[in-house]
Amino acid sequence: MEYRRFGRTELPMPVVSCGGMRFQHGWGEVDPKDISPEGQANLEACVHRALELGITHIETARGYGSSEYQLGRILPTLPRQKLIVQTKVGIAETPRQFLEQFETSMANLRLEYVDLLALHGLNDRECLERTMSGGILEAARQLQKEGRARYIGFSSHAWNDLLVEVVNSGEFDYLNLHYFYVDQRNLPTIEAATAQDMGVFIISPTDKGGLLQKPSPILSNLCQPLHPITFNGLWCLSDPRIHTLSCGVAKPSEFDELCAAVELLPEACTHLGPILERLEAQLESALGREWLRNWHVNLPAWDQTPGGVELYQTLRLYNLYKAFGMLEHGKARYNLLGNGGHWFPGQQVDRMTDWQQLEQCIRNSPVAGRIPGVLREAHEAFKADEQKRLSQS
Image (cartoon, rainbow, N blue to C red; front, side, top):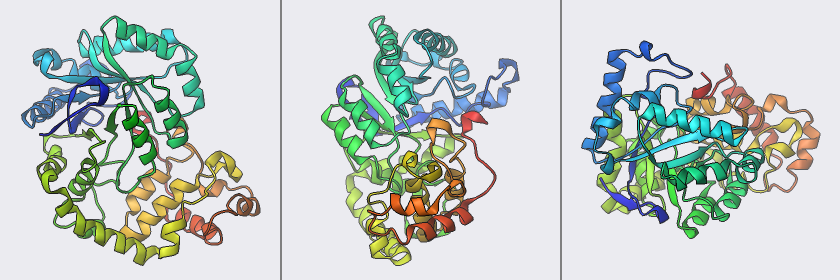
């Protein structure tokens, strides 16, 4: 394992973290008596495998079903001073509710303190207002003063406009965000976080980064001789501004492909170069140079389009589908639109209320004439039964 200084926290962060959202018994409120011995044994095997690999960072969240409770059965048996434990608590309506949720987390984890406490889901301006002026951040700071949370960060599914503003406030020690080969939109946020000396934690590079645990045949072939998980992990970690990647496992062996990227880091450019050339060539061949260079330019945000249709995500997923055959990933992400709340805002294409008004919205796009047809094609390809976020299941 390789370790990187986690920004101004000075914590020695392993570049792969043990994510706690897939190895638990279940989502929602789980009765402890319903957790089977086999299920608990699997979670503990995942934790022990992480430690064998040198993964000393274990992260979970109040919203991850039974994850905290089950971790609380093993964490007190481990050498606390060698662990970096993070939990994430949602941005509640009031500071009191936030503190109550934190107390539940601590009781579940059976710990006296957490190293990292993230304000979970700082996704829109309403959440930002509750955090910065509604008392949530102040409550978190009080926990920090009491020694119950060493460092305060935030997690977000938002994009750069909001994220850079929060980062530049200087109020947070670290952040959790999305950034992968298949979606590089948040690079300006990483640059801003680096300038603030913040820790940078990448959320779910395997699943959100392309459903890479079930890669398409085209993508698998293009990434040879690496597994797509290994390629994406190596691509992310080749940037020293990124400190750790969350590896949310359902069984111990699922650490293998991502940890393989760590072994290749000393010669990252040698391994990445040929694969990147093939991927870029495939994108251009499938989509055309003009579209590839311009599809994202001057796109209005979802709240500025007729019907609140989310253009960027729809077009991005279309590109991956056409170039790399990533249909299942496209369906999984596209069908969260309209169902994911502030975690995945915006609507699907069938909510378009005025196509002529859309033409006005996208008139400054260099490829405006092609966008309506692509949106319709994407919707036909991706439309399926509505999806819910795992925590809503």
